[in-house]
Image (tube, rainbow, N blue to C red):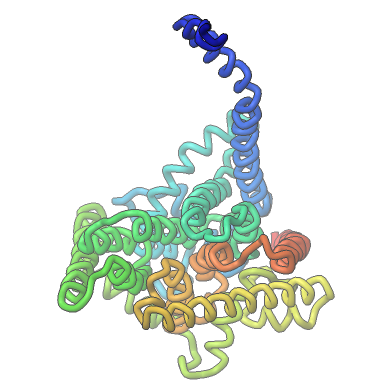
Amino acid sequence: MPSPESTLAPPSALTRAAALMSAQVHAVPVSRPSTLTVPWAVLARVAMLALAFVVYAASFSDLPVIERRHSVLGDADAANYAVLLRGFSLGGKMGNEYNTVHRSLGDNAQKHKVHHVLYAAAGSAELKILGPAYEALGLSPRAALYGVNALLAVVNLLLLAALMRGMNPSGNPLLPFLAFFALTLSTWVFYSVPESWPFSATLVLAYLLALHRTRWPAAALGAALGIVMLNNVFLAALFVLVPLALLRRGDRGWRFVGRTTAAGFASLGAWAGGLWALSAFDGSFRPDRFVAFTIWFKQFTGATLPRTDPYVWKSAFTNLFVTSVVSSQPDPGVPQEALLSTLHGGPLGIAATVAWAALAGVLAWSVVRASVTSVRAEGWAGAVKDEAADLWVWCATMLGVTVVLFYPSGFLYSTVVIPAIALALCRHLDLRVMWQRVLLYGTLALMLANNLDQVLRFRAALRVLS
C-alpha cells in the first residue's frame, strides 16, 4: 500500500510561482524602512552644506570696510581680491605689482592675479553666477562676493568627506570631523571673505584624492602638481608626498629614483608651460618675470627676525595649529601673540584652548603609537605604508614653509593645514571608545561657543572701523 506521501502530486509550476510571490510579498516590509531612510539622509547632508554656505556668506558681508582696507581681518587680502574678482581678465592690468609708494588695492590685486591666477579665474566665474542669483533672491548683488568662498567651503566639505571614507578604520561617523573643519576659526574667517588660500585648500584636497584614489603614473602626478602651482607656487611643497605615494605602490631602488625624478621634471614643465601660455595674455606671467617678481616681493615683505629665532617658530606653530582652531582676543587682525591674549582672557577661551590641546595631544600620541607599531612590524617602510602618513608629513612641511615664507602669516596659511588635521582625527580616533567620544564632542561644543563669540567680537571691531 503506497504511503500518503507517495500519493501527493509534485507541485505544479503555478503552485511554485504562487509560493514565490507570497515570499516576495512578505519580504516587502523588511526592505521598506531602508528605502525610506535614504532620502532623509541625503536631505540632512544637503541641509548641512546649505547651512555652512549661509553662515560663511553672511558672517561679514555687511561690513564694507573689508573691501576698502587692506588686511583688516586675519591677514586676509580681501580688499585686493574684491578688486580682482570683480574686474578680472587675463589680459587686463589691475595695477603695478612693483609699486612701493602708496601701494594701492589695484597694485596688490595685480600681484595676486600673477600669483593666484586659478583662484582669480574661478572666483570671478563664480561671482558672475552668484551675482544674478543673489539679485533674483532679492539680495544685494554686492554681497555675492562673500558667497564665492562660502561655495568653496561646500566643495571642500565634499572633498573631505570623500577622503575620510578611505581613512576611517574605526567606522566613525563623518559628521563630527566635518564639523571640526567647519568650526575652526581660520575656516570660519577665510571662507567668509574673498581670499585665495581656501582655493589652495581645494587643490590640496583634490591632489590628496589623486594620490590616494588613483594609480596615475608618476609623471601625471607631477604634471598635476605643476597645474596646482599655477595657483600658488609654494604648493610645490606637496611634492614631498609624491615619493611617499610611490613607496606605497612598491617602487624601490632605481625605479623609485627614476619615477620621482620624472615627476619632478613633469611638475616643473607643466608649471612653466602654463605660465608661458598665460604670458600670451599678460607678460607678467612669463616664467622668468614671474620668478624675478616673486623674489622681489619676498624681499619687499620679508620678516625682520632671522629664521633661527625661537619667536619665529613659536609664532608660526601657534598660529598654524592653535589659533587656527580657537582664539579669544579682540584684534580682528589676529596678531602673532593671539594665543597669549587668549590665555590671558576669559574662561571660555581658556577652556576651548585646553580642550583642543587635550584632543591634539591624544591625536599626536595616536600618530606616534601607530608609527612605532608600523616601524617595529615592517621597518621604516611601514611608517609610510599608511596613507595617513601624508597628513602629518604635510603639516610638518607647512610649518617649515611658513617659517621660510613669512612666519607672521601662520593663521592665513593654516587653511591648508586644518583639512589635514580633520582627516587625521577621523583616521586615529575611535568614537566607539566613550572617553574619546566625550572629548571630541566636548571640544566641538566649546569650539562652537568660543568661535561664535570670537566672530561676533571681530564684527564689533570691524563695525567701528567701518
